[in-house]
Length: 291
Image (cartoon, rainbow, N blue to C red):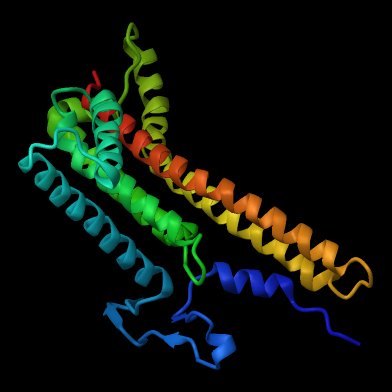
């Protein structure tokens, strides 16, 4: 009797992080996976921090390189076209420039303000392009989606939190920033003001923590869910592929649904990169103008 494969274990192994990378057609050619170096540990007191590279780290480096190549070659193409007097940019340069201008003007500057928005535009653009490439890398064969990991989205949310709070502290000053934490409702005085301040201050602190947590959870959940759904649909072939007369129908239906999900994931990859950049810009802008 044919043993039923452990679909759950297969899905978790494929969606989880690891210290090895599967090479294209490695199973067919008998090539072992590429094992990444291990043992890079840092001892801080009694705590041991593992700094060994993982699959997500490698693909984040790939995403960063792709961001640099995209903008570098776009810049060269724009300079060459303008030097030649060709007027408006063409081709890929036109598309990338349109995206950059949209994120800069309609996301960063529109959310943060014309005074401070241009200063934060490079950071917001970096977030958008990096997250976008991280999302798209998971849709190619043998690729990996780093944003499907809590660690990666948590680190991105941490950079957003530091940017939001530090920039707010610089913009408002110590006294103004303290008012965003110790909040006294307007129109209250005496014991009522004290009691409401004691109640509202923890809420304000929790609110500061919830913002990056929402960024982390939204990006992770949306990107990881697509992989789980696609792998679950493909698993139907292995679960029901031994049923006579229906095996080809099951295989065709699974592949068709997976292709449909991949098309949706392609759209979600762009949407989630945009949403992360938009919400980060909004949170920065809210603290820049806090009173």
